[in-house]
Image 1 (cartoon, one colour):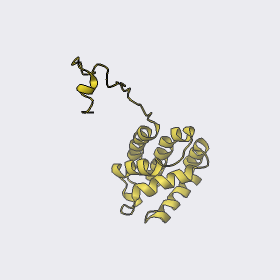
Image 2 (cartoon, one colour):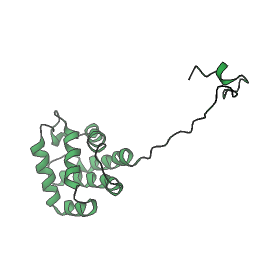
Image 3 (cartoon, helix red, strand yellow):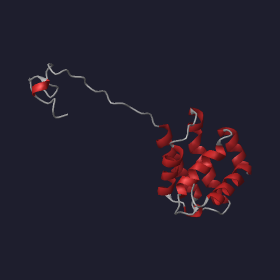
Image 4 (tube, one colour):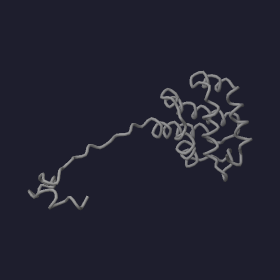
Length: 148
């Protein structure tokens, strides 16, 4: 855990008891606090105070803090809005300058990291005695087999 754990826990618990936090918890579920704490802890690391968050820290908090969490599909879909709402709340409470803008950035980044589908490119299976896919007319084993 990072050096600012006490501040992080305080900010998260205060958000969850606020009106926006209660709405977010209803939409997200009971793991909202743990997700926000993991996000903010990894965004800050050991060197950045929570009040000094920037876009690079937001990206780290999402990729490092939330990537490994075992979230249900519905939770993954709700994470971008949860983080954006949290950062906007931090701005309105006077704790984080630019929280609204960082929230918008976090929404886009979290959507890209957590909701992207893994697409596997189709590969051509070529046997050694089949024609080479490069179009040379030679057998694959005599042409490009050892280059790949």
